[in-house]
Length: 200
Ligand code: SF4
Image 1 (tube, rainbow, N blue to C red):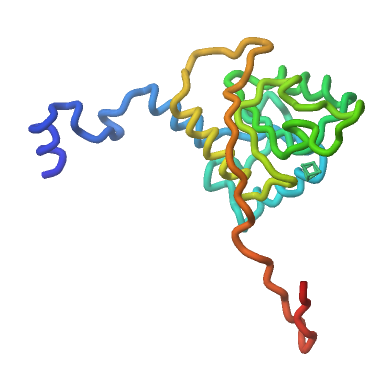
Image 2 (cartoon, protein in one colour):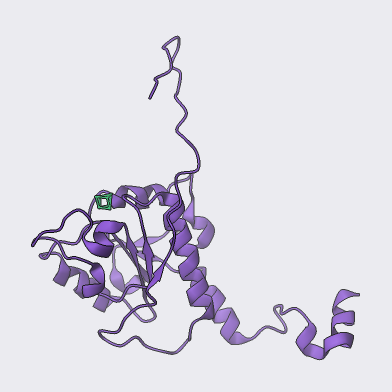
């Protein structure tokens, strides 16, 4: 009787949306957020964590994101994983320009976000100088938990954002900073035969 009571109390606005009563815009936002494929853009050590996030333990296929595309025209989210050299910057921008609208960017790690410890002329001091960044994932490297946090934050932005708006050529992204999440589980030593457990 829940739905009937909701209608009696608040009219049609009181019932939970479902396949029949939901809006097309909500359906599009939901579908987009659950099928945002990544553009392959691992640049340094952070990329190892990104690859780990795609593995079976963390399993980002839960979010419809297990498909990393080598072609930017089939990708929705660019995860900039690692430091961006000055030489790579125009390549990164070209790949971003080749991605279809709508598109989003996650800056993964301190190097991509600010240059990190590479405060020198060879490294771009923040990838937001090259492309508009939607979500910043902190850490060196960010754990897969942190990257998943960034991905879920981005999904929230997609679900609440505008559908038709195209991004300006040099406009800013959402510029959302998330908190770092430490690895949840300490690695457990694996005993092989009678070998003693490795300490430290
Ligand atoms: S943030 Fe750390 S792990 Fe990531 S690219 Fe820089 S040095 Fe490597």
